[in-house]
Length: 113
Length: 118
Figure 1 (cartoon, each protein chain N blue to C red):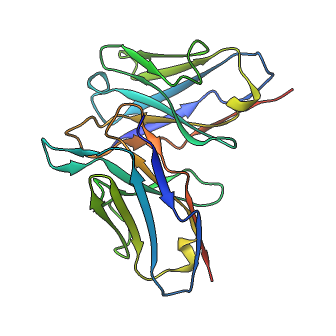
Figure 2: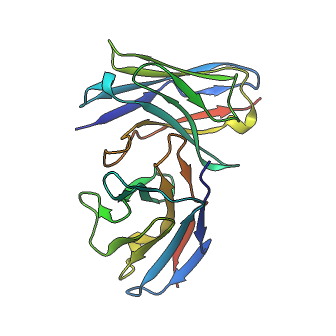
Figure 3: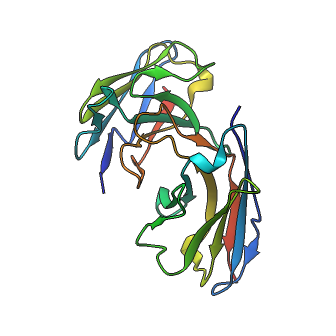
């Protein structure tokens, strides 16, 4: 199975500042036939199911604020929140959907400093 | 739009059985694989099983022999039969529409809680 490793496990960022979360896959998740990376980012707030933010590593899901952006290719990916808002306090997960046995990062907890 | 609604969650004793259901709508159900993914206190988000459009099945090692996935294309339903349940199976179970390579994204249901406790 592909192992997904996120860093850091938690971070505290001041309101309005940038938050950056990294995700590394143990093998490439780039599908060469369409040149897409099969990497998704989810946000999970307390007591709620995970919410899809980003797919194909960098495509924002409809309705997701543009302060959320994804980047990276191959095995190294980043989720950036450009200006942290109070409602962004949550746990963030990366997930590869390149293989049928989906795998997830361990999660990164984002808090307000 | 794609809609997935899970049902059947409950409290069950260790060693017991439970069947989860997922009602799908908004897409050509028979053409897509369907996953079950769970979120447990011990392991976080964990893929459980996939049933392909042709009915072939794939399982995580942690559930092989105890959980069985099935589908009814005439009813747009996917099921998860859970036998020999353990306390570590406690968690929220999500039904997920597979996007397949070439597609854009999976679609997730809201999840259903299963509690295994004496």
